[in-house]
Amino acid sequence: MAANTSSQSITPQLRQWIVEQAQAGHAADVVLQSMRDAGWDEDVAIEAMETSLRDHLEQAAKAASLPPAVPVPEPDLADAPLYLDAGDRRVHVLSMQREPRVVVFGNLLSDEECEALIEEARPRMARSRTVATKTGGEEINVDRTSDGMFFQRAETPLIARIEDRIARLLRWPLENGEGLQILHYGPGTEYKPHYDYFDPGEPGTPTILRRGGQRVGTLVMYLGEPEQGGATVFPDIQLEVAPKRGNAVFFSYERPHPSTRTLHGGAPVLQGEKWIATKWLREREFA
Image (cartoon, rainbow, N blue to C red; front, side):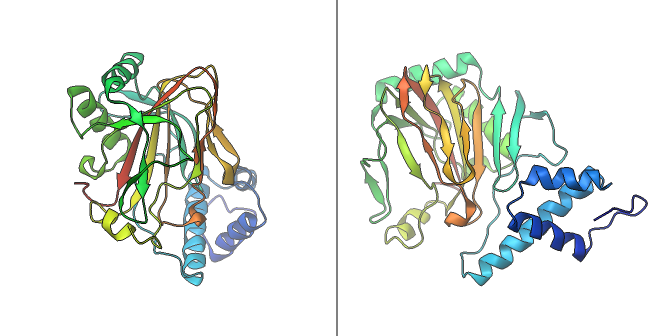
């Protein structure tokens, strides 16, 4: 797979080689390094990997009769930046994975903003509920043992400022976001692994989708650090994200199907308390 440095074009042979590496279980960073070692320009190699794998996954999805893919929120990571401009704040890019798209951000929220969100939410906390996909309503779920509350979009100047920042960072319309949810996890509480999209096979899903379509992205922001435990876990890709105050993890899912490998959960808090703010992004305006 040697590259001609004078003219580097993405050929069908190169695309096939990339797909074969993925099918063999080789990680994206390993494949990218192999291409670099063979003389490929990094930007060309990244473009080849992204387009080849996307096309391959789309063909496999059609063959398996999966739901069609839709556009998703996506921060501008084309040039592997260390920082991103979020308008009023310079956000750090701590790590990123391309397939599936999982990005860990640093410095998304200040300590003062984290404290203010907690204090504004504290009087309204109650046992967390989840969407009831059988009815379209809400229900208490034994898999989720946190307390929580929702802010309305732009309910306070602080909420509006953070929502503007998120919209710019993720390049997704502000009006397509659900209200910010604040969650509190004490010792022993958790949220077992789950998907954030709404299962098309459930009877209540058509009712849920009327308010803005499918969820297509999730941003989890860490407001308060537990002393031990409480990581955000992604079992399918063997990833754990530590709940560091001011940091966040973002992931997107282009179709409501496990093939997106976005199964995730909140590991049990072993000591101390965890506070997070969650922002879900929809296909269309959320009303």
